[in-house]
Structure formats: structure tokens, C-alpha cells
Image (spheres, rainbow, N blue to C red):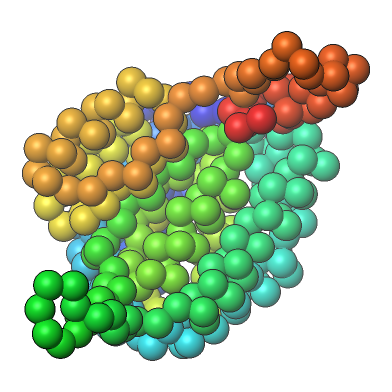
Length: 297
């Protein structure tokens, strides 16, 4: 878990700004303390990204988009496969990191933050190899043919929550990268240590500079990020209230959104359901991850 502070600390301080090649200093002065919720041990301080750091993460992603969007499908797929392999190698470390940061039981963390997260990259890599950049279709109302191109929308801002961080971050990253988009990732502050491990994975896989940048900041930074005209699409998982706000901000500038908003594993049980089966099936879905989950049952 994380607590905000403006006070100096003797604990290790890690950066909240990654420009696609290295972690940079954040000079905003605001920090957040990461605490292991199971032991109350202070893990580190995070120097949070501020509005002053916005260009440091959006500009490299904007520049990298030109070449990444033109990278052939097969080459992009190979990048994703390399990320999947590197993630598998670091999977145990990532799973343990998430458990320390936000308390996820380690068995669930290994399943979601290790295995499922790595599979997201390999899944979209394989899917990409089945796609054509250009489809030719017969014209409907005139002679000739219609050419339909699969073109990426641009720079994506991916904003993920803390409860299933690996799988929710990678479920935004992998399809965006496969489509040829570059990504500005905003993880939850609680997952700052895991975000640092992720960049090591990307670097080991040889992902080009700027294709993924990372900013670990609070709500004010998030507001500035979604306002930025260089962001073509905002992919957000979180509360309905924040999602409404993002939708309004991005809609005002006619940008695109992908919003996965609040829920709590609601189940519809019909009159003819076998209650013995229901009674066994519902608890693992509703109370997985100590109940910190929203599951489509």
C-alpha cells in the first residue's frame, strides 16, 4: 500500500519517471511511501511524477510512434514474444514484488502477475501473425474495390489499478503494442517496485526506446496526462467516478477511450440453478485476492 508525504525520508527513494530508456529524477518534491501491508515494513519512497514530467514520458512515445507503427507485423510479433519470454524468466520476482506491495496471496500472484501476464504478450503476438495490414473487399455501391487498412490510433495512455497489476497492465500494453501503438503506462503508485521490474523485462527483450514509457504519479498527474492532445486513446481500469471524469475530459477533445469501470463480482442466479454448484462456485470468484477483485462470473 502507499501513503503520500512531502517529508524527507531515510528510506530508499525510487524514481517515478521512465522515459523509455532510463529512470529519471522527479523534481516535484512529492513522494509516496510504499508499505508491505502484511508486515507494515516500509519498502521504499517513490518520487512521484508531476505535470512537469509530462513531456518526459509523452514526447518519447510520440517520437517512437513513427517507426513502431511502421514496423512489420511479424517483427512486432517477435518483439512481443521476446517480452513474453523475458517476463517468464522474471516471473517469480514479479509475483513476489506484487505480494509485498499490495498483499496479494502468492499463489494468486504467480498465476496472474507471472503466468497470465506473460501469456498476454504471447497471445497478442500469435494473434498479430493471423492479421493482414490491408484487406481488399468488393465495393458495395460502385465499381472497383475497397481497401481497408489496419492502422494504429497513436499514443495510448494505459492507466491500471493496484489489485491485479500485472495482468491489468499487460492486458492494455500487449494489444496496444501489437497494433503498432506506443504506450505511456501509468501504474498505481502501490506497484512502483513492480514497474521498475517491468522496464528491466522490456530492456532485456530489446524493445525500442520510447515504445513504452512509464509515469508513476497521483491523480493530478493523471488529469494532465488524459488532457494531453498527443494521447490518442486512454485505456483505464478503475472506479466509475474516475472513469466518468476521464470520459468527459477525453471526449471534449474528441479522443478515444477504453474504460473498464467499477464492479464487485455480481452474480445472477436463475430459479433453475443448481444451488449446490452455485455455493461451491461463487466464493472463489467473489473473494479471490482477499476479495480485492471484480470478476465477470
